[in-house]
Image 1 (cartoon, rainbow over the protein chains, first blue to last red):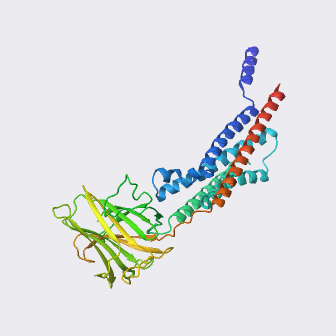
Image 2 (image 1 turned 45 degrees about the vertical axis):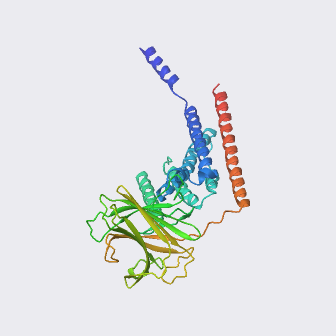
Image 3 (image 1 turned 135 degrees about the vertical axis):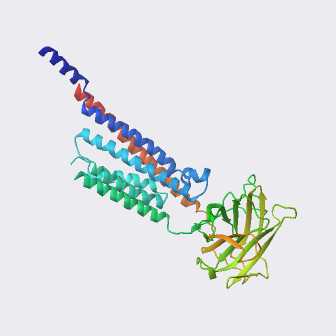
Amino acid sequence: MPKFKKEIKKKSESKRVPDEKLILKSAKISAILAGVFLVLSLFFNGTELFFEGIIIKYVKKEAHWEILDNVIKVGVIVLEFFFMMISFGNYKELTGKPVKLKEILFLFGLSLVQTIRSLIVFIFTLIALIIVIFYLYLIQES
Amino acid sequence: MKKLKVKIFICLLIIHLIFTTNFLINNSYAVIEPDYGVAPEIDGDIDRSEKEWVNATKEKINLISLSPTDPGIPIELWVMQNNSDLYISIQFELETHNSQEFIGILISESEATSNESFIDAKILQFYNLGEIGEKYEYIDCYLLNDEFFIDQETNGEAAAKLDGNEIVYEFRIPVNNSDDDQDVFLDFGEKYAFKIVYGENPDYPNGIKKNNIVLIEIEYQKKKKENIWILVHNILCIIIFFGLGGLFALYIYKIMVIKKKIRRVRE
């Protein structure tokens, strides 16, 4: 009877995925998503063709389509920052160090610099990024 | 404690939403900033093959009466301009059009929307609409104490065409070049209130049944950016995004390195 119990315990231990592996997986997936949004940001915030407003150019030049265009531009930057923060946080956990404020500010700056072409996109991205940082701060385990 | 933090976060989100809404909706009247484009032919017909009105700024508004139960007439308003004229197209559909119908554009001397501010009117009056002997007349008026007087000199032009139940009105109004005291001098860089009026019988202003106001800013022709600045802007963008790509590649490399390290430690 005791022998049987011991075997069960061994089996469950062998199935358990190590924490590092999970963290690494999360860091990789988040980094890939951040990369995808960085490429989208390059198209929407970096290239002239897309920046003029891909929707108002091909759908209709109306105020609400223009707003949607700007929402897309802000959205891709914010999502890129969000996934990059998650990925970087996981990466730092693997190295055994906490994420420093200057590293957060560095990522913050890298995200804001993508809004070089438009003041409106810059203002709304700035507000949204502050909210994201605040949100990430709130969900931290104290 | 956590609940309090969530509440603070929700409050911040609401403040952000209010701020954004306030930023976007700052005026009760639609404000139109027309783009420059190739002058359309004023014939009441929108020739899509010729890409007429393709640069027009499009806005949907309702022409309403004083009656609160009146659903109004939803119209599509297209506005564009060039150096010499402002072009306005008004399109709408009615179940049945009266044999007499008019659309008028009353122009204020400024952004003010009080009745006495509207001192100029461009009207297109239809007679026998949809019948034999259909014709229309373009009337250039000035307003004095709410009364309409025909201008001595007619400036601008208008045309319209009924197709099924849908009617298209097109107006051309001169900008920045009118010496006529009976017309509003539309100056570049200034905003003016335009009252769109609808009625049937040629009796102004008593025949006006529905109306609405929009603000139109007469734009200066946008100077094309200096080529050197476009070049600098593009180079900056290339540097920034290449830089970001490089940093991202370095980060991925670091993840790969740490992955190998973990594997080595485990072994």
